[in-house]
Amino acid sequence: MQLLIRLIINGVAIWLAAAWVDKINIISPDDGTTGKIITVLVIAAIFTVVNALVKPVIKLLSLPLVIVTLGLFLLVINALMLWLTAKITETTEYGLRVDGFWAAVWGGLIVSVVNWVLGVLVPDGDD
Image (cartoon, rainbow, N blue to C red; front, side, top):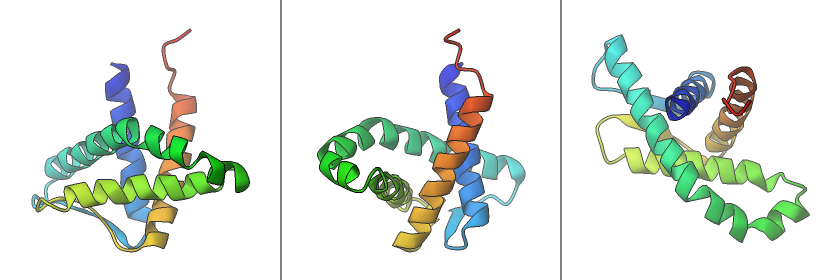
């Protein structure tokens, strides 16, 4: 159940990033609402896997840069994870499209903030 909640939170965050940043688009061959929701959930699942497998390694390798920049390099890491998700989904006719580094930075910032806010609002079940 917890995984499903996290997946929905990531989906909402990516959808908001696509809605608020001009150069981030969600491409779906089906114009219906169900098709778009499924596309967003697939993108969120890929984003979750990328964050679980790749992000810890990148954070560890870039730890000196994170320390020197007082954590601001984490924005670049978030942008890279969003960009990597877009590159993985580019091989299909649907998915996430990110055009440019600054679009990825803004999208990564939006995804981080939305994940944090929704993570605070949704209980994690550790009580």
